[in-house]
Length: 545
Image (cartoon, rainbow, N blue to C red; front, side):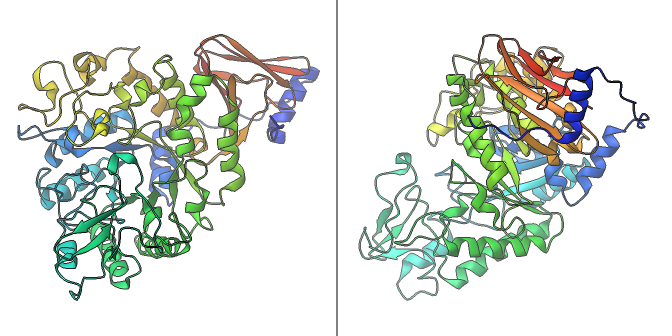
């Protein structure tokens, strides 16, 4: 592995002085910082999203208030105090709009209303109000690439070739037009991206299920209509949008992903969002190697983009027990991302297997992956139930991804505190043991672990905006980095194996002073070398100053 940049000079000086035996004068002690007050300050400024911990919430599976077995906004409102106590600062809501539910809500039939399963617009407004009373912001899923085939726009478009909305979707006389070679995103969605419509007697294009026709963004009316949808929800008080498969808006024979025309649309959407101070855009990247293209110049496209090279693929690093790929992934963040960009870091979501079983032979690795998610430079997004270590379910209502979408278990017993009726989807295994009530007072529980992680982040600007340095080590089984700002500096190291590991590096690369604030490893200086010692399955967060 090529040598990586060393730590900033202030840390080098600390090490050299310690190793040489020279005495150093101590600076006057700084006054203690009220971390809760500091958190409030950081989370109210323009960079609030850099310091926030987000929580991906599936309303359908979070809390049912009326006994129909389906989560709703009144139920979610009743659980806001739990989210506040966990340390959550912002929510990302999976789709909340009316839908035939062919793709779990990602097939929208009405962009300006609430899925009646979840309540009414008034229920949503109350949820927003109560969330903001607790200092919790709300970002919603915005699905712009396609609609449901039940959406009135599509019903008009298919009705005739001279309808005013005839050109609002992508139509063709053949299922393989030369100007659009783009296929389905995944085999799960079918065998052809073109479906024949017997009413219009033409084929329409769909990147996903046939019930999800793609909108035609070459039509300026579509562009303006979708920007108006964003304005509708921003006027209602949402704090921004997570943009679903946003790179796929345009197709041509030149390409199928994040074309220049798509970037132009994103810039138009960013201008709309910028008209509502404090609101943000989060991109679902379709590039699992490098999300840098979603940021534009750093201030004209997305505020954040999901780094799926880590978020969806971290299990490979723990399965191999080698850190090389992690250094490559975050090396790209340091070299390719423009100033102002911010990683959105996950270790699971509604689209992939639960993080608790991502590495089945090494269940401990989920906690180590969560530590990297929390302490690397970026904004963490926790998938609901991840803090409990929920296990994947067995039943399917829509497709195989339902395994990661089971209802939240709040307490042991029938209904698990989620519903008094029959849940829309059966609970996952061990729901009694993994419930919030069962873990609440257990010092070794996953919930306690997450509470501690979030408490360590809270009110510390360094984790959201501090400098990130990747550390050169002589042991490929450890991944290590430092974080620094004017106030603090930390070293973080994670063992990717279940065997004890030691890494040696030069004294000019690592600090020798400090104190452990998290984990079970240690850092020591010996002559001109510094060693990081980690037990099997271990990690350390070492406060340098």
